[in-house]
Every structure is written in C-alpha cells, then in structure tokens.
Image (tube, rainbow, N blue to C red; front, side, top):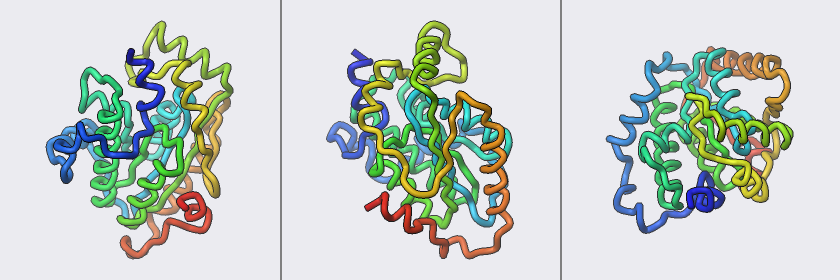
Length: 240
C-alpha cells in the first residue's frame, strides 16, 4: 500500500490538500523548532548565505553527496526524508503528508537563510514548479543559489535500491524503491541553465572541490543581503 502511494506523493506535491489546512496556517513554531534542533550546532552566519539545492531521483546519491559537501564546507543539511520522519514517525506518504513535509522544509530553509546561515537542501526537486519555491526563497532573503543535479546510471541505482531493501544503512532515511524510481523518472524535468552535474558512480571529489570553492568565494563578498539578484536569465527561463 505504501509503495503505491509513494509513486505519486513522496516528493512532488504542490497544491494544498484540505486535510492539512488546519495544521498549516502560518509558520508552525513547534515543527520549526524540532527541525532546527535536529540539525545540531549551526555554523556561523555569513555576509551572504548560500542555498545549495540538490536535486535528483531516488538512489542517485543525493544524500551521500550532500553529506560529503557538508563535511567539506561546514554547511548544514536540511534533508526532506529526515524532516518527514521528524514530523511523521510512521509516514504514510499521502499527498497531504508530503505537502506538509515540504512546506515545513521551505519554512526551515527560509528561517536558516534569514539568520545568514548557509544550507544544503537534500530532496528530489524534480520539477520546475517545485524548484521555483526554492528560487523564490533565495531571492527573498538575498542568498546565493547554487543548483546541483545528481544522478547515477540506472543499473547502479537498481543495485543501490535493492541493497537498501536488504540491509538499510542507519543514515539512509529514504523509503523509495526501484519501482518508485521508475515512476518518478517519467516526470523528471532536468535543470536548465547554469548548474553542477554530479555522477555519483564516479569520483565526486573534483566536483566537491569546485562547489566548495564557489561557496568559499561567496562568503567574504561585501554586498547588501537584501539587494542580491539570484534569478539570472537561465533561472527566469526555467521558472516561467
């Protein structure tokens, strides 16, 4: 039953289901506090915070890449799978639940960036309309947006997801399966314009170094935080 629901609702919900209208309202401080607390000690604020949007299908290696980038740069990671387990210990992956999860993720990202703290968002982010929320958040708080598409060859993903079912790693919080991967792959909209491409079946150290260098280059830049344009021509084209 869960697998059948996962295919359509695990990550890509964009309309407000009636079932969550009451809980949504304005920003929920209790949910937000729980999410922020789960992140541990936050890094020092930057003059211009960075939002690293990591996107890709289940099993592509997004969380592996995000953890490696966080270790290299000291950035904090907001992971949609982790937020789901915080809010819903026994998730059912209904559309209402997924809407709630991603709404809370977006609230947490805005809160963190508003404090001047750079953050990595680890989620599928497969469609333009879903990514638009993140572009708007970065624009609203004057953050630098770095976009990363993560993937791996299908045969590698197949082996990873089958291995996950047989022996789950403690850091692996995703419930997606190979069947879910195939269903979600149909609706993928690749990122257009400037972004990083990462194949996690290969050595990711070179691309980690490039992204870390870009992040480091942003931090010392003197610029008014609320007068920063992050939606260049390529981003506008995708949003529209």
